[in-house]
Length: 83
Image 1 (cartoon, rainbow, N blue to C red):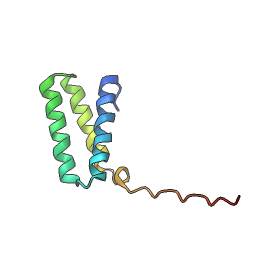
Image 2: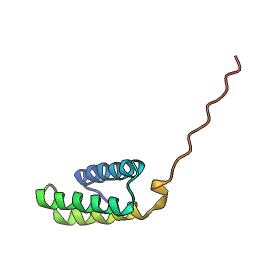
Image 3: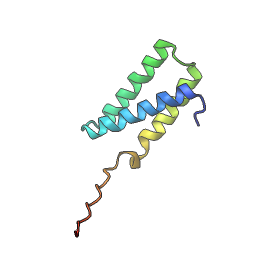
Image 4: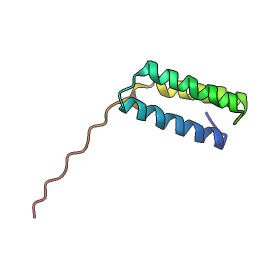
Protein backbone atom coordinates (compact mmCIF):
# COMPACT_ATOMS: atom_id res chain seq x y z
CA UNK A 1 0.00 0.00 0.00
CA UNK A 2 1.35 3.35 -1.01
CA UNK A 3 1.59 6.01 1.68
CA UNK A 4 3.96 8.64 0.30
CA UNK A 5 1.96 11.49 -1.30
CA UNK A 6 4.31 11.97 -4.24
CA UNK A 7 4.28 8.24 -4.98
CA UNK A 8 0.48 8.21 -4.85
CA UNK A 9 0.40 11.05 -7.38
CA UNK A 10 2.68 9.09 -9.70
CA UNK A 11 0.47 6.02 -9.25
CA UNK A 12 -2.68 7.98 -10.09
CA UNK A 13 -1.06 9.51 -13.15
CA UNK A 14 0.24 6.12 -14.26
CA UNK A 15 -3.06 4.27 -13.85
CA UNK A 16 -4.99 7.03 -15.61
CA UNK A 17 -2.54 6.82 -18.51
CA UNK A 18 -2.85 3.01 -18.64
CA UNK A 19 -6.65 3.20 -18.89
CA UNK A 20 -6.41 5.96 -21.49
CA UNK A 21 -4.01 3.88 -23.59
CA UNK A 22 -6.29 0.85 -23.25
CA UNK A 23 -9.26 2.88 -24.46
CA UNK A 24 -7.19 4.03 -27.46
CA UNK A 25 -6.68 0.43 -28.51
CA UNK A 26 -3.31 -0.49 -27.00
CA UNK A 27 -3.08 -3.93 -25.43
CA UNK A 28 -1.36 -5.44 -22.40
CA UNK A 29 2.06 -5.84 -24.02
CA UNK A 30 2.02 -2.15 -24.95
CA UNK A 31 0.83 -1.17 -21.48
CA UNK A 32 3.61 -3.21 -19.89
CA UNK A 33 6.19 -1.46 -22.10
CA UNK A 34 4.73 1.92 -21.11
CA UNK A 35 4.92 0.93 -17.44
CA UNK A 36 8.55 -0.18 -17.81
CA UNK A 37 9.47 3.09 -19.51
CA UNK A 38 7.66 5.15 -16.89
CA UNK A 39 9.45 3.39 -14.05
CA UNK A 40 12.80 3.68 -15.82
CA UNK A 41 12.26 7.42 -16.19
CA UNK A 42 11.46 7.72 -12.48
CA UNK A 43 14.64 5.81 -11.59
CA UNK A 44 16.72 7.94 -13.91
CA UNK A 45 15.32 11.23 -12.64
CA UNK A 46 15.71 10.37 -8.93
CA UNK A 47 12.29 11.93 -8.37
CA UNK A 48 11.51 9.53 -5.52
CA UNK A 49 13.45 6.95 -3.55
CA UNK A 50 14.22 3.61 -5.19
CA UNK A 51 12.26 1.60 -2.61
CA UNK A 52 9.20 3.77 -3.35
CA UNK A 53 9.61 3.06 -7.06
CA UNK A 54 9.62 -0.67 -6.29
CA UNK A 55 6.40 -0.30 -4.30
CA UNK A 56 4.91 1.74 -7.11
CA UNK A 57 5.88 -0.99 -9.57
CA UNK A 58 4.21 -3.67 -7.43
CA UNK A 59 0.99 -1.68 -7.14
CA UNK A 60 0.96 -0.78 -10.83
CA UNK A 61 1.47 -4.42 -11.82
CA UNK A 62 -1.36 -5.42 -9.52
CA UNK A 63 -3.53 -2.79 -11.20
CA UNK A 64 -2.48 -3.97 -14.66
CA UNK A 65 -3.26 -7.62 -13.87
CA UNK A 66 -6.78 -6.83 -12.62
CA UNK A 67 -9.09 -7.19 -15.64
CA UNK A 68 -11.88 -5.22 -13.98
CA UNK A 69 -9.85 -2.03 -14.43
CA UNK A 70 -10.08 -2.34 -18.20
CA UNK A 71 -13.67 -3.46 -18.72
CA UNK A 72 -15.86 -1.44 -21.00
CA UNK A 73 -18.42 0.33 -18.88
CA UNK A 74 -21.88 0.42 -20.42
CA UNK A 75 -23.30 3.88 -20.81
CA UNK A 76 -26.50 4.52 -18.89
CA UNK A 77 -29.60 4.76 -21.02
CA UNK A 78 -31.10 8.23 -21.17
CA UNK A 79 -34.43 8.56 -19.48
CA UNK A 80 -37.35 9.37 -21.74
CA UNK A 81 -38.99 12.70 -21.03
CA UNK A 82 -42.73 12.44 -20.58
CA UNK A 83 -43.53 16.15 -20.55
